[in-house]
Image 1 (tube, rainbow, N blue to C red):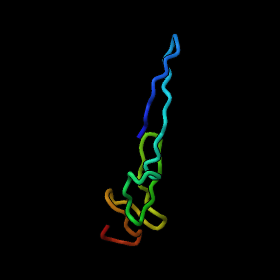
Image 2: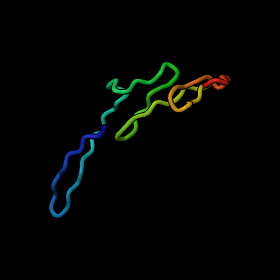
Image 3: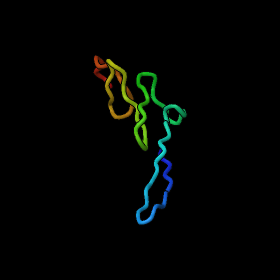
Image 4: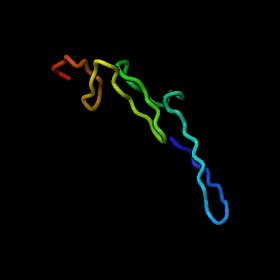
Length: 66
């Protein structure tokens, strides 16, 4: 999530962005097989080593039914 503040400086306007770390603030729920990664303006869960994502959850790479 980003919070933007408009700073008016004639003749242009500049936006100061403050990025909120959703991972640090516990705003994202990742599974125990993944970790939260903060991005500017958002965040995402990335599967741990040895796991892959089926679009919803992280599954072991060897799993045939993920």
